[in-house]
Image (cartoon, rainbow, N blue to C red; front, side, top):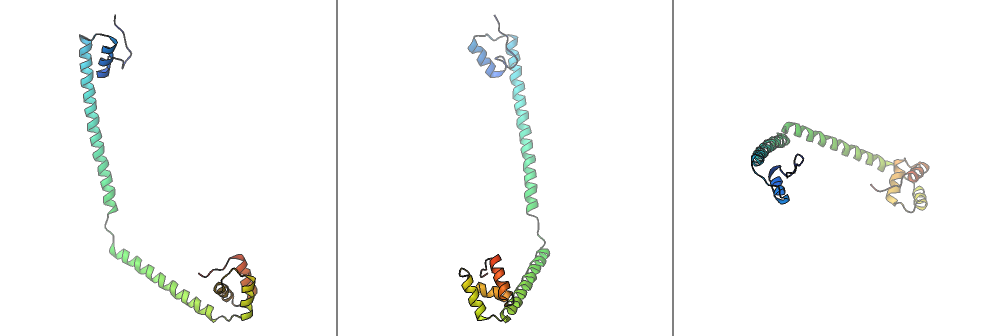
Length: 156
């Protein structure tokens, strides 16, 4: 008595032969030749897959090599130098403007009474920060106090 298995059952490949032997089904004759043909075609498929995998790996390596080469492209020294010079000039301009602003602030007269009042009204603030705030508002006590309430003054 022969059993019929669905496609991919015990008669398919090496695993099928082992399963058929375990179930007591005898193999021989034309079925054995079919199994041999299937194993050979499976081996060819595996070798094709390995060949395709190797080909895909090589192509992937080419892609990554190309990206790496692109990352290491030559940098235009003149362009870098020009940008550095631009940054240096901008920094010099900012420093010059900051110095001018400091000169203007130092020329503002601050009354001692105004400074004492600000210190007593805002005891958590540093004296230097309050003095700077008062100078930034041209010595106007009311404007300086309003600004101090809006934003906590710091020495920066």
